[in-house]
Length: 130
Image (cartoon, rainbow, N blue to C red; front, side, top):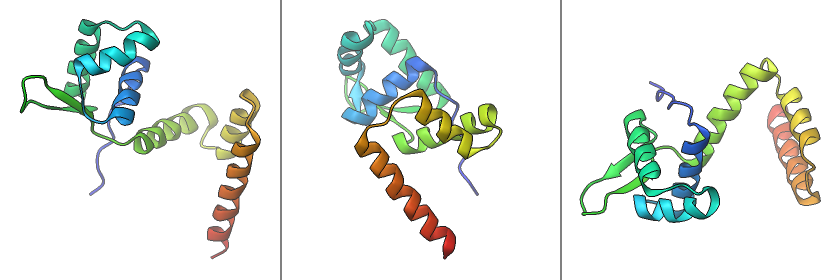
């Protein structure tokens, strides 16, 4: 039985998830310290968002110590794949070609990124032929 998809995170929730993916399990204070610099997010805002995210199932809270630690339920890759699939379906009618063309025309890719994309395309081509 496939796992049910998690709800789509908001921009503010994604910012918190990025902190948790990078740092691992973190307290509200640790999350706030990172977000304060980048977004000006205060402690009570981060706490409220983490509480909402816990209710939504996006994060889980470890209550074994005095300062509760939060961690992301899904990996960055899983969340990104879910968001891309949603965008692909809603904005591009399921066309991966259109998504890639728009992504590459919206923001210039570096030579390294283009080389990595070519390598991935070669891999996909080999798999398709097998």
